[in-house]
Length: 311
Ligand code: ASP
Image 1: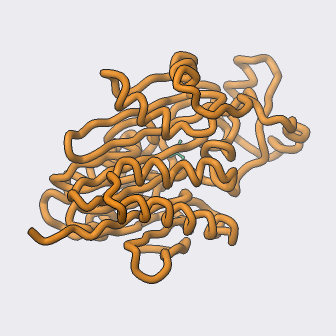
Image 2: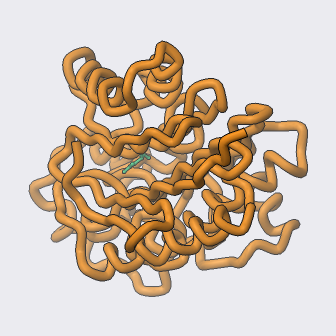
């Protein structure tokens, strides 16, 4: 039997801003961690988890230590992970006070009969497994609220002000985006994962696509693995990750499928997103319809490829 050559792809989100040098260096380091695991015969699942942990820990992306705040000033994070051999999956949503939601997602998959845990019970679950903690609210208070919200028009902002009669806390906008990874291991199994602090101006309790299997991530050895980034509300409504995998089964090239589905996202519901797509044969695409997508890949040859403009 022909041996399978492993590969890993990772992203640091799609958006308006170009990748910074520290973000590019961190993505390279994360790809190296993931690939070395695959090279030594590790599973795609563990490679995806460990790659995402590097990004969560860095504070350079909107995940883990760098997570955005919801309008009440609290970090509530979402993450999910899935493997393509037995279609096992785990997710956490609105989890607080931990550095590595992706590990909490893997533990939900491996230690429970469930797929997703949410809110305070998800946080208790993570604490039970002694996952590293971080403050629910950042140590440094955000700067004056008035200056940060000036000029912003948002339904969420108006609704939150009405609901809470005032108090509003949020961090400076932009600059950091969601993280994710997909991998193929030597056994021919694919896996996908993603981790996020959400979007700007979120109502407390808002959950995006990232922890929803079939929306933010999907993995099936009969098709491939997908990790999404972008505006979660749109990605959920078109169940984008599963849609891409279903179209891969028809044998089309990953780039063709990714472009087609992303185009549909724009024309149907004015969505915006980026995708990592990897088939179980090792064909892959990084595609986005936002100006930049911080991402890269490595198959052990040369140096990891990292950039912010793909197909
Ligand atoms: N998809 C994430 C969310 O909607 C955000 C992102 O990818 O930037 O929560």
